[in-house]
Every structure is written in C-alpha cells, then in structure tokens.
Amino acid sequence: MRAGYPDFRLGNMLATSFTATLTERCGDAVERIPTPQRLVDWFEVHGLAVESCSAAELELARELREAIHTTATAAAIGDVLPAQALRIINDCSIRGRAAAVLTPERNREWQLGSTASVDDALSVIAADAIGIIAGERDGKLALCASSTCRAAFFDTSQSRTRKWCDMNTCGNRQKKARFQANQRRRTPSTQTAAR
Image: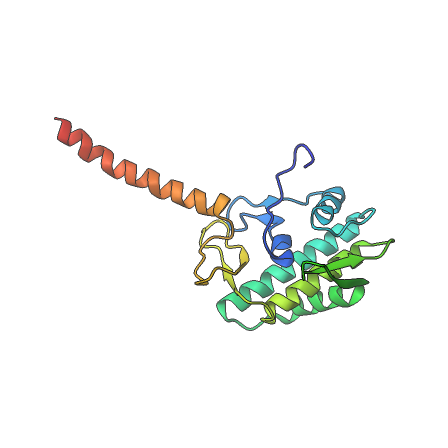
C-alpha cells in the first residue's frame, strides 16, 4: 500500500469491506480513503479497477459508504431502514454499468467495462450492499462489540455469534485489554502473598 496511509481492512463481503474504509467510528476515527488516489487503490485491491477519481467522486463514495453503514446498522439492530440512506444506495446501484460474471470456481464476480468509472465501481458496491441487507446471503449482519469501532459486518460463522468485525484488530485489542486487566488484578494478591 502507499506509504503514509493506514492499511485497508479486507473482509469477506465487498460492501462491509467498503464501510471499513472508515474505522474506529466511535473513537479516534481512521479514514482509510483520504484522497481520490487512495480510493482508486481500494477499488484495485477489490477487483474494481478504475483509471482515476475526482474529489467530487471521492465525496460520493464516502456518502455511499456512510449510507451503507447507516442502513446495515439499522438492519443489524432491527430498526427501520433510513429512507435517505436507501435513496443513496439505490441511486448508486442504478447509476453504474457493471456485469456479473460466473467463474469456473462457481463464484460470482463483477466485471467493469474497459472504460470503467467510479460510478461503475460504486454501483457494484451498492448492489452488494442491497444483497446483504435484503438477506439474500447465508449469514447475518452484526455490529462489532468494540465500543470504539461498532462497524457493521456480515457474520458467516456457523453459530452466527461472532463479536468482532476483525479478530486481528478489534478482537485482539479486546483480548489484550482483558488479559492486562486480569494481570493487574493478580499482581496485588501476588505481592501480598510474597510478604
């Protein structure tokens, strides 16, 4: 990845990976697509290569990201889906030109045309979000248990009880904090016993 920028969080669903371009939403937020070029980089990593991106297109992408996050959060907690966010998702889905293709491995992939635009890439992300939120996939929407993160993620674990958006970040951070708290609780009793 480009020097000076935080790494992308790669998830198993395109739409929720896209919402993870803004992390630690309830703490010190980390913007992972701060520039148009960084959005182009994200698209490339996810197989949606586009030539360029303007500042206005970056703003549209961020607007879609927040609409997906807001809608996925509402779906995860059983709230009514917000009308304005739905409008943004649907508008982005309609705007682009992309085709679903079937791979020999029986996977659906999206293919953009030779003159792919940001609108085309965003339409794929919006369509993925629609499929997830509509319940077309085997799994469930959930919210990260980290009080500083609260990212929406798609839980495909067998029991559907995953707590963290990413075990390598939020999960490990919480486990480390719990371990350190347990160590602090043990230290006074160890010192008392040594006397």
